[in-house]
Structures are given as structure tokens and as C-alpha cells.
Amino acid sequence: MRLLLGVDVGGTSVSALAVMALPGAPATISVGRGPGANINSGGGARDVRASLHTAVAEAVRPLALDDAARQGVSAVVGASGAAAAGRDRIVAVVSDVWTELGLPTDAGSLDVSTDLEIAFAAGSGDDADGVLLLAGTGAVAARVRSGHVVRRRDGMGWLLGDVGSGLWLALEAVRASAAELDARGPRTALTPIVLHALGIDAGPDTGADPRQALVAAAYAGPVAALGRLAPLVSQAADDGDAVAGAIVARAVAALVSDAVAMAAGDQDDVPCVVLAGSVLTSVGPVSRGVRAGLGHRLPRVAVRAATAPVLGALHLAERRADVSLDPLDVERAAATVALP
Image 1: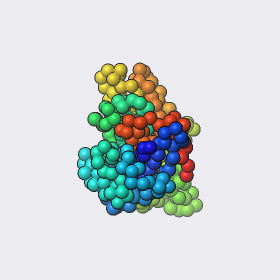
Image 2 (image 1 turned 180 degrees about the vertical axis):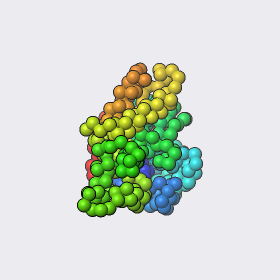
Image 3 (image 1 turned 45 degrees about the vertical axis):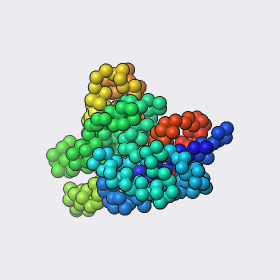
Image 4 (image 1 turned 90 degrees about the vertical axis):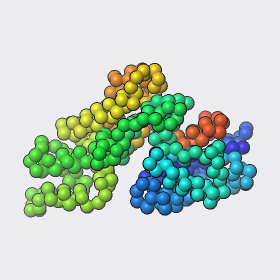
């Protein structure tokens, strides 16, 4: 009997997946969830601690672990903000939560990884080497060797980069709308769509200046809140809008360039590129363009889509424990994670 525990500490949510492997019997599977948290933003360590404790406690509670089972845990926690700059803080928080829950914190039982490493593991299968290309709220490409990120490109946040991310797409849509309203840019179907999505009535009978209304709406809340506009760009591009199509083309070019840069050298050393994040794992013009671009630029490299990051953390925990879950148990775990 061995308990495998995979955890994803993300800015949107925290997920914990516990799988009790039982010889000759189906595994016992349980999931726990908590609100999103990031060690480098918002409530920082306090929020991470609270959300992590909630998710892991919820995942292990149904298993009714005895002392022996608790000592047989193989756990991998993947966390945003766990790279070099924030690693000591996130490791301290995770260790404290593990101690509170009576789980072992020795190096053989617990490993803290980055969110990029579990995202790669969620799509790489048995390959520990390759390239991760992630485009969700942010965007980053990373070279992975032996399961660890050794080099990266972009991932610098909305102010300095994240080109091709959902938030970048959204901001480009808002900028294109502003340019049209200010007579600095071409007409685009994005403008009325963006104004409507932001609750702006730009009808001629209102007498209001839509430019000022757009300024007020764009600056009214956190920048990340504008990310919800990203799907509008994809839809407008698919509908033939030239401005939206140009935004998508720039996103595709940047993302493909980032992945190719991380695969520089002999393609035979890069068995796969794993696509992760909502922009690349959902159907749309960016994901289609990226797949086509990678097929052209890296023809000998397999392109794979990542599943949920917490499944990547579980896979790494499985690898660390040197056990192999039954494929049916892995499918059941994936189905459990997919439940609301």
C-alpha cells in the first residue's frame, strides 16, 4: 500500500489529488480543492498556507490514514512562484502544512516543484526531457531536462512580456479598440464587442465619449480581470476580422519562436513539445496556428497536449515512488479531477 499525492498550487485554484495504491485492487482516489494563491502576490504565504491546508486535508481525509500509511507518502507539490526567487518561502509553507497534517517532510517523501515542471509532466508521458510551451493567463517556454526546468524564455508578466498569453490577447484587443475610437487605428469588429463586454453603451444617442468610457473601464480593476476578453479575439479572428487576425498571427509567431528557441540544437534531443494553458489546450486559431508552426519548424518533434497540472504532479509522485499505477486508475484519477 502506497499513498501518492499530487498537488497544484495555482493562482486560480489549489488542487490536491490523493491516490492510495492497493495491490491487486482498484486504487482509492480522492481530491481536494482550495482557492487560488500565489506566494508572490496577494496574501502571499498566508493565503498559500490556508488554501494548501484546505485542499490537502480534504484529499486525505476520506482515506482515514493510519500512522504507517502517512509515513508511506510520496508527494509532489507544484507551485507558481516556486522558482529560485521564491523557493525558500514556498518550501517553508509546504513543510509547515505537511507537519500540521502529520505527513512526512523528508526529501524522500516530499518534493516541491515549479508549476512549469508539473505542467510538462502532465503531457510528456514517460519523457523527462523536452520543451514546455504554456499560454494561459501568462506565457512561457521552458527547456526541461530530467524533469527540471533548465532554461526558459518569456514568462515575464503582462508588463514586460507574456506575449501570446490570454491576457496579452485581451490587452491587444482593448488597445485595438482604443486606437479605432481615437482614429489612430483601423476599424475592427473587436471595438463593439469589447465595449459591450465591458458594459459600455456607445450608441450615438448616449452623448457620451466612448474613449473615456473605455479608459475608465480598462483601469477600473486589476489588469488580470481583462483576461476574460481573450476568447473574443479568437472568435473575431475566426470570423475574418483583419485586426483580430493580425493579433492572433503575432501571438502564434511569438509562441512558436519561443518553443523553437528552447529546442535549439539537435531536434533528436527534444522528444516532445508539451502544450499547456487554456490558450493552447482549447480549440482556437492560436492553438491551431501554433501546432502548424511547430510542425513546420520542428518536424521531428512530437507535439502533445497537457492534461490538468495536478495529474502531472501525481505522475511525478508516482515516478519518485518507483511505482506504476494501473492505467485504469490513472483514467479514474483524471475523471475525478475533471468533476466540478
